[in-house]
Image (cartoon, rainbow, N blue to C red; front, side, top):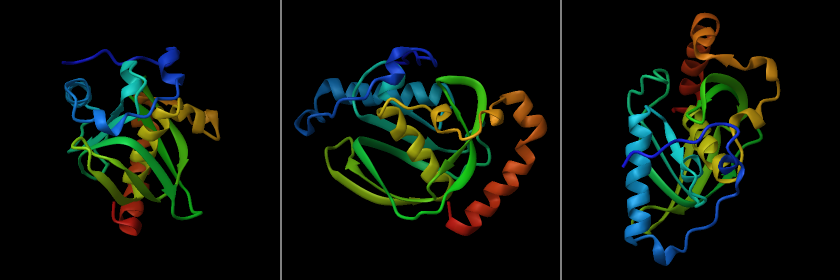
Length: 190
């Protein structure tokens, strides 16, 4: 079922999500929620979606990039379901990237993200997962995990003057950013 994605200003986006009882991951309720997150994200052409974005305060998010028209420059990420995820930064280095968000419609802004991270948590089958993500993809994972802590990308912006509409981004910044993404992908592999 496609759910309503709450927008900036909705208190649900500022809620710190509750951990999911690992014994409940296989429940119909959690599995249906995961299915709804996937369907809602795909319907909106998102690169990810956190449960808090549909006003469900649980630590579940999904990420998928597959030739996404909203982010044509992002490398593909296979569908990834994360439950109770945590992230560990693996480097002091940061990349300065433009991000957008389904809960902040028609906008982009620059944030600093760690380009090498370790992600740990559980998948939709209740199995432990642990993997490293690098480059632009690492930023995508950090963006979704931020939602579970009541944060949106505008909170991470060091310079509010980088906030731009999609149209202005396309006209003034997108080409340069695509070149930057190509260089990040060359350096980190994704």
